[in-house]
Amino acid sequence: PELFDAVAKAAIPIIDTFNSQALANTVNAFAKMDHGHSELFEAVAKAATPIIDNFHSQHIANTVSAFARTRHATQTSKLLFTKTSDPITVNSAVLQDWDDMALVAISYA
Image (tube, rainbow, N blue to C red):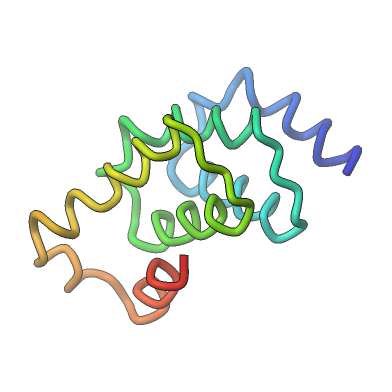
């Protein structure tokens, strides 16, 4: 836990420099270790929301799954979840680009 707290402390100030894969991998690593650092997850939600349209399907799936596994539910994360569902519901063609593992991960979350 102390290592993850130190990583979160270092990452939060520079989270806006992370690309979609780095954002997804960061929260996914925390979730896998069952360490839902609320400040970090909030920072990731804020950073990811405006660029979610640029996320690869696997990055979306990993991010949503991490938030679900840690039960991080705030107004900011709800906005992120809403944004992640927009391209899926509005343009079902997006789903054609998703591989089977990404579909399973997003459904599981």
